[in-house]
Length: 169
Picture (cartoon, rainbow, N blue to C red):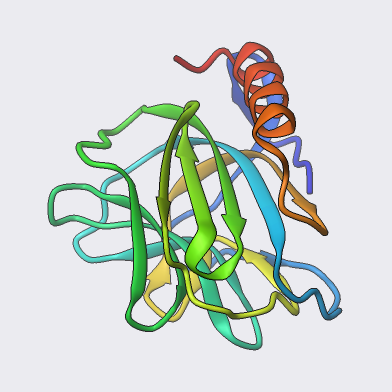
């Protein structure tokens, strides 16, 4: 997904308004393991948890931002969560990688990885900007889904390339 209405450091992106906008793909089935990567800028910190990435059919897997401590987290299914970053603030720019692989799942925020259990949900119809928790207000530069768990080397290469392209810390 690439938009053209907004910019992150002068590069084409799009904004979800936090009220009614979302973007989703056609349906398909992708079981674990898989890796979802993205580039963002936070527009507002929500009053409650809001989903940046989710799935139309299952809701999970989710990448969300929350008001309590301003957490950026990935959740593979109810009861499983990995906190990628505490203290996210307005105008933060970041790249994420989320490798969903059961108990060996990895979430990364600007290259800093956290290992945890994200459950076992497959992805069936990716969605940007909305989920079971509500609409997020973010600028989205890109989202890429790889049909496998990226190796540490491949993940670092993608993160370094995306961080340079989107000028994130």
